[in-house]
Amino acid sequence: MSYPIEGVVKPTILVVDDTPDNLSLMRELLRKDYQVQLANGGERALKLAAMQPQPDLILLDIMMPVMDGYEVCRRLKADAATRDIPVVFLTAKADVEDEKRGLELGAVDYITKPISPPVVLARVKIHLALKAHADFLRDKSDFLEAEVSKRTREVLAIQDVTILAMATLAETRDLDTGNHIRRTQHYVKALAEKLRTHPRFASVLTDNYIQMLFKSAPLHDIGKVGIPDRILLKPGRLTPEEFEIMKTHTTLGRDAIEHAEIHLGMPVEFLSTAKEIALSHQEKWDGSGYPQGLAGEAIPLSARLMAVADVYDALISRRVYKNSVPHEQAVAIIQEGRGVHFDPDITDAFVELQESFRAIAARFADSDDDMSRNQAQINSLVGA
Image (cartoon, rainbow, N blue to C red):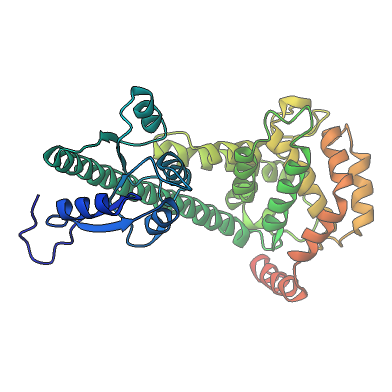
């Protein structure tokens, strides 16, 4: 093997042997084509193997004092930093069992002494070529893995931005919403994590599903973009006719998300969860909700979780048409709705988590300035 191109770095061979004559012999044999490192014992060999730049190949004697070659090989292969360096045993131990043991420890070859120089050079060349190929494939695999990870992060970022943009659009129509979508997003996640070991929910509330819930929750009121201003922004109580129109925000939201899926040409997991929440978060456990009058477990779990989160936040939030109620009163109202409005087990989890809900509400509280600005905008829009 030769390297006629100036500046090309020769591969490095580490020779490990406790006999000086053997080290000298191997250095003379290899130095024309390779950089040669010498180690007269196992400890020295392990240190050199771990140093940068690492050797490209190790020729290793077996019969050495203190630490034999088998132990050196075992340690090299046990260390993530050195396990990919090919090891070739170069030894006077010629028994089949010795060779078998060496190969089982991870050596790529086994050459017996006295050596044949052409055979040693040929095998060194072969194993260096194999290592170069393996390194290329490993580097390519690492590059592809990094690219996949990068693209995955980009896709997730696009999803998050899309959701935020859609949710913010709904928020600009419903001026009282404020931080409602952020609070409900965190309420739902807290409930899901609390219930993940519950026998009724454990099979559904996986890490991935909880992530989908958190990602999808902000779209629960996206359908409000289709409600007329005269109804959506009305500062007083809605008439029965107006309330019927307001109730359509559930189907409008589901249809909008479904339309997006159709354009994509494929189902998207987080959008499927978002459709469930948008359509069914106003359903009630006893079947008296809307738009489909679903009852009990016929209501999707995602929507049952959002129902508790949505009502709690509506109760504690001040609106232009109502005052907020204290946290304790909101908790009591939700408890009264156990088994009527809300899934009983989700209600119990909420009661246990009530201080976490209080903390989330404080973290994403609407400011007085937000409320004053919203009131002014509503007055302008409705001609007050």
